[in-house]
Image (cartoon, rainbow, N blue to C red; front, side, top):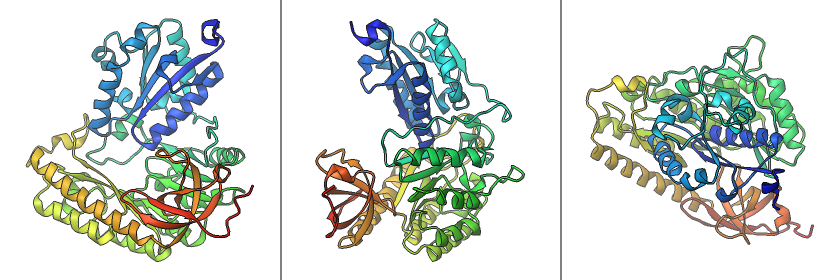
Length: 451
């Protein structure tokens, strides 16, 4: 009799669509359920519980959700329970039970990830569970279970929710008001993951720059960076996501002071047009954004920048889009998450019905932006040829298990031949060739690979 038939082991399959916050939440779901006997599986056929954790910031994850749930029918028929989690579960709530009638057993939003054990326990008793209410900040407890799975890097959350009111964004409606996690908890988790062999810490939140500002006596984000850098064993620090409005001089100074702070920053701009930025309620203008970029590059000359871009926001003219193209040239982003504007339920932008941009114009603009962005990426990667980069080895390449891959401080992915014992270490790699999305290299001379 198998373990599953005997009842001594249960399997959970978690599928994630969306941002790094969703990835982090999925890891915490798995870690919490392990306390009740669930082990993670990548095989749907083995799963007793299937959870799809999806965002609703853009339309594509919603389309993926519909397809995924439709494919779950055979697993439901054999007795597996199916749940929907994440931002989609938060804003759609009970409507998901109607939309996927008889196909879904549990729906829970991000605030209820810490309660997933109780929720699943109710489902196991035959109940259908909806948990998408926001918890009061005094009741909310950040999940403290450590999840590393032998990886060289780990996410550590520092806040939840967002108090900004960007007109295109559904996040405040799906993740609630901003709440900063106590710095003592953050540092405790950092120390715990480093003890497992993690070398790189990524601090995550919806707007990390505003960390602690609403809590009397709490550290600022810059002060938190210095504290994390003091933890023995932390060799690299990344963070996401930043809001340009809140990028202060103290954080920029940290790029001068902290060698652990990596030379890469994702700094979402959304548009290069002042008019569009006002309509989006971003509370900075093009000049301010470029000044932040200048200050960052003055503090850390080799810093690489990536961004988010929305094309076709209501009212965007050809001239507005040209401003975005010229900003791309001015900054030379090394990567962009660029999308056509998609209306999100409950967002203020739904009221902006004047001069809606046609789908054709959106597509043409996005194609043009992405083409130029790709050219800049290739130029940047070609410029790395001949350089030697310090690379944190993450594991085997997904394209070739005999090849190792890792990232430079500037977040460039590089593939190279080397022994598996190098995983989790930082080694010098000479770049041989630059491609569109990655580099190819070889271990620099003098690297000891005998251990």
